[in-house]
Length: 284
Image (cartoon, rainbow, N blue to C red):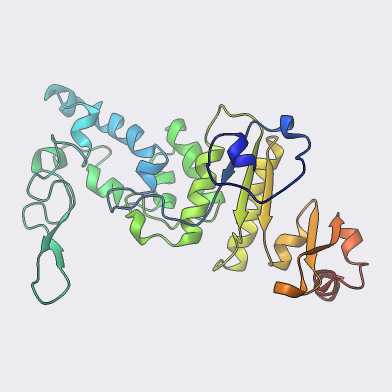
């Protein structure tokens, strides 16, 4: 219903009588675990705008300036410094008639995606391909004096994503990693009004440390004036929530009723709430 009201969805909602206090938010957004991109060309660096900054850095190097190389020259998505044999993919597809197609490293660029001319430009001893092979932790140290990059990389590290590689193909990221990158993208946007963010079981597949990192980041969204609505079963996540809506008492046909809504201290006293029962056993 909110998505239709804010014109971000045309799906017909289930029947409802009214939605109160809609004026308090300026938008609604679902942050799910779908990929951040559907091709290997998309990666954390391109998705978060880091690559634009990195390309400008390389284009400002004296050797690049002397040769007239602009930031676009260091993109693997357009003609210029990319390898034209693989068109910046880094690999070539071999069509197999009776088997699945085979992908092999491009012989011309050896999988770097770039021409020798592009790779000849170095920033602090690294070419553009070598920088894209850095992890976020490594890039933080490498670009420690570039505030525009440092702050964004620090956020990703805080989210528990320091191990990701800048140029890691979007298709190789897990659902949890993709979701956290989407949250990071929202946090990095400077101009947006109070927004309702909806997450469906965001802790699925996450290690305990990553759950804590996710909670810290979601708290950032809340502290900025946004609202986070999460459908979740993780007890650590529920324990950290400001407001809990418990549906039950059973699942499926035996549930669907609001057993409790309110802060944590109320649900642990609710005798007919399984959620309250397990919270008491684990935390109290």
